[in-house]
Image (cartoon, rainbow, N blue to C red):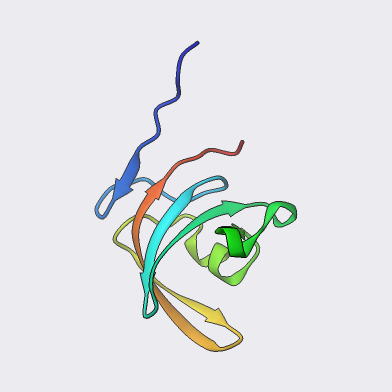
Length: 90
C-alpha cells in the first residue's frame, strides 16, 4: 500500500490551508497549531477548529509566510502563518 506524502509548506511555499490541513501560526500570545475541520468535528481546546469559525475562515486558502487579521469578539487578532501541512479532507 502506498503512503501519502505529507509536507509542510514553509514561508514562501505554495501549500495552502484547506479542510484537514494543520496550520502552525503565531500571534501575540505565542505559537499555535490548528487543524481545520468541519464544524461537527471542532474541539478548540484540542486544536481542532472549524472552517466556519473566524480563525478557520481567515486561514482557509492561506500559505506559510502570510499574515491575516482575524475579527473576533475581543477585537482584531493578527496572525502570522508559519507553515501549513496538508492533511487532506479525510
